[in-house]
Each structure stands twice: as C-alpha cells, then as structure tokens.
Length: 407
Image 1: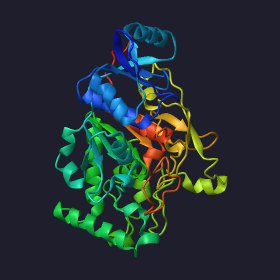
Image 2: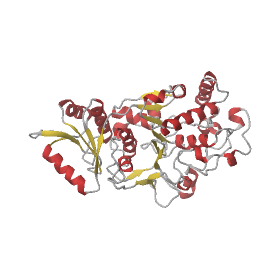
Image 3: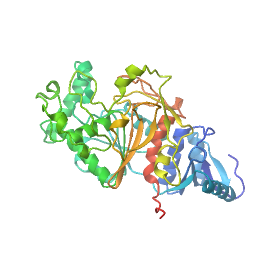
Image 4: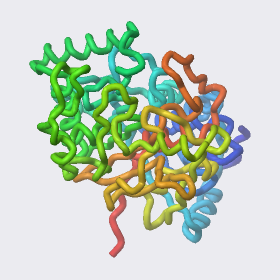
C-alpha cells in the first residue's frame, strides 16, 4: 500500500479485488476491539469496511493477507456522496461483540462452520454448553451461536444408522451424565430448559445465529414443551400418543404447523427440512444454489447487512437440516435467501422481543455433503466463500449502531 498525502482512513474493499474476504472480517473485528472507529459501507464494493488509518491496522492487514487502501478525507467524502444517492448505506460499528458458541467441550473447531470461520478470521469467542447456559452464562454475551445441536434430546436422529458406533454411545453417555448432574431425569428435559434459556436470551435483547439442525430442533423442543416426543428406543418410555395435535406453535422462533417424525429409525425430525423433496427434484451439487435478496439499504439496513456479499448466488450445501420449508414459516420471518421455484428457503431472519435470530440451513458451505468423520474444511482454500461470508456478516451485525427511525 502506498500512502497518499493526508490519508484519513483505511478502506477494506469487499468486492472481487479483496484478497481474503473472510480474514477481512477479522481485521474489522480487531479494529473495534482496539477502540478504532469503523463503518460498514453497505452495498459499496461488496459491503466494504472503513476504519481509522493507523500503522498497527495497516500492518495487521499485511500480516493477515487482507487488501486495504489508504484513502484521503476527500476520497472518503466522495464515497459518502455516492452512498447518499444510490442503494447504499453507512452503518457505524460501535464495539466488538462478545461471542459465545454453544458447543460440547469435546468438539474441535472444524466440527462447526461458525467456529471454523471464527478461528480462521482470528475472531475471539468462548465455548459454552448446557451447564454454562443453565447457570446464567449468557448474561455475559452479545451473540450466541448454536450449530448442529438436537434440542429434542434425540441425538440428531442418528439412532437408526449409528446406534452401535462408539462415538454415538459416548454422546449418549455424556449427555445422560450431564442431565443427572443437573438434576434432570431425561436429556430431553435438560435440552428443553436450554432451549427456553436461549429463547429468553433473545427475547431480552440477545443476537442468536444458528445453523443446520439447531433451528429446526429448537423450535420442535419449544413447541413440544410438556410432551414426550422421544421414541422408546432412545429414552426408555413411549411418546405421548397425542403429541402432534398438542404442539404449541406460539412458543417457537420461526416455524409453525409442522409435522413431527416420531420414528426413531428415520433420519428426520419433521417436515421443516426439505431434504426428502430433493430425492424427487434430482438435485445434484451443480444444480444446488440459492439467491440472496437485494434489500433497500436505507430502509432495511438489517437484511442488507446480513446479505452483504460479492455475489448474490450462493452454492447450496447439505446438512441434518438442508433447507427450511417456506410454507411453514411464521408470517413475520424475513427471507434472506432462497432457490427458485421450490417451497424452500435457506437463510431467514426475525425479531423476537428486543432481540433477533438468524437461521442458515446446511452444515458446511464449502463441504457439500460433509459426512460423519469427514476431514476438516481448510478455509485457506476458500478465502472468498460466499456462504462463509453470510456467517461472518452475522458476527458483525451486533456491532452496528442503531439509527433513529425516520418519521
């Protein structure tokens, strides 16, 4: 980088000129953490960042392999004028959010796309799990992520295929031991209380991001409060025969009117997941993609923040929950990304009380199938991943300063 006279700011472009899109989020996060001023320039060159010019920040960009341009105050003013007249917006970023990832202590960073992204981008986070959440740990955090957790207490519906595997049996034992330690007679009861804790955290102002099966199973657990929906093979006693009719959808985050899959041998929780439809659609990896919605940046800055990317087309990817059925969404839920011509959405957002939730379907944006015990994804090979950018948009979203609504 060659410094012009009177340099005022560092512009971190997020269009195709960026050498490492994912680490660019880490640079912005570190700038906030160190107390520097930062702005998110929505829809400007792919959602670029503008931060204070400082030697340590320009050195950090060089160290992390992130493209940055020193620009003068006059150039900044030109950018502001362009933003004023086009479908763009400036969002001031106030402080680095304090991040928690809900994950078992035995998990490695590559078990979860979000922790993989955070680790690669060098963004700090804490791992929390059942005992921490139930003890009130969420009070310390601005942002919470849950990945492929099964909040129904059915261990991901892996019973049919993996019940004789040592890793599955170890998962059951560790969960049962934790439930007993915390005073629960069943894992499903413990997981329900965790789900209710997360719901209350969001209602009181928390930011909640979730992927894969967690969005589906947390809503199932909340709707089934007071009911036994866990098959006998898993918890030792039968399900409530009237469980489906007794579901209470007023308790859920995003989904309603769904039907449960109550067979322990079937690898599915409910009809929220659209994966079975794919067997009819004959989709393969080359056909599987979805589009990001183009929002009005000045009127709808939140969905615009969450969809910042250098492309509006994102490759699809499978998971325990591969896609969300659009017809089962509550009316207030905002669709951020979906494929064409199917009853399916991939990326959604909503408000709950004073907080927000954002759900992304699928397991790993750069590993299409990601089978059990597959090797970790090397993000150094996917520096420009649109799917991972969506995850990292959510990391910075809580840092945005709220603007007064125009009347």
